[in-house]
Image 1 (cartoon, rainbow, N blue to C red):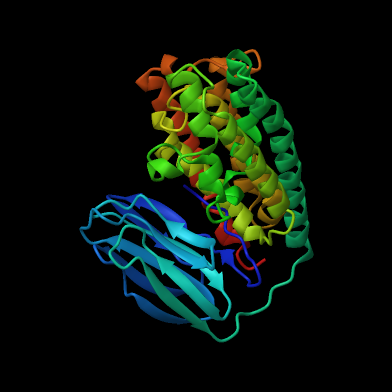
Image 2: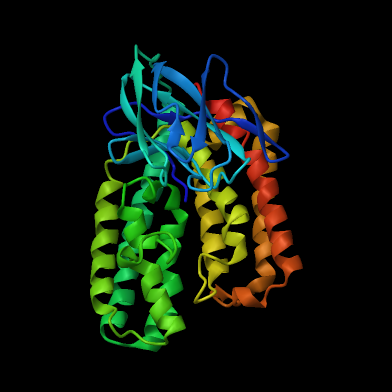
Length: 372
């Protein structure tokens, strides 16, 4: 899962890293002036368990030293996920960076025998103010609000069909309802347990906590029924309405928006490309297109900042978005797409390559605007 990192009462920004794939991990070029902190995933959780740092840009370097119990490292402010590195199997490593103000944060390594540690940040981070960056934030916030409104509007008839036991209509409306969510998924996943309630897959959460879209998807396609899904549908509608309210007050920075665009595409090529997201309905291509649309909207919000410093990169990213859309076009049928099961391994490999190429260019953006 991924998050476009958000702030509550603190100033938090994802600081872009230029990543070059190298063997089992990545080589990262940290922003100038950033401090580096190294953490190891062990059976116990995060090591060190207690850490201190000065306010400002911090690069978190995370390595799995050989544990199968823990594969994820998160930094949280209360229940809000500020930054994370996940899918770190044994021997893998990765990095991310945050700009943190003074305060106490939680280091969370789920699955460890002692999952939670503490990061204490002291001092004062430098203030930043840029009208162009504020314009980017305003533009993207409007995008979030439009899509959460659309999410609620589309979820209402979908859940109504489920409650009315109209199987055919529920199947028809399922992928339609999910599009706005997939566009804003990085932000949605930042709100504690709200995203798991809406979007968790069967293996993401304990069986008793499996709810939301994919619980209904499983019933509609794996069991070909709506039986027992009315309470799940009602709760899903309540949860997307809660999400609609939460995005109205989420506090963003321009670099967060840029990083989220890249992470969104990275998840498509790293995990969604396998078909695990829509494993019952096989409507994965609908999700892919929505993910790309969301990444494009995020980039368009910060594009003036990019074009000012590197117009060639801005043009290249625009061209790469066009290539990704072109790679999806052969599979379109009317307003939707063919079943994901109809794609060959060569088809999915080509899609992944186009998305990876775009993500590689997008990965250069946060470092350009980190000081904005």
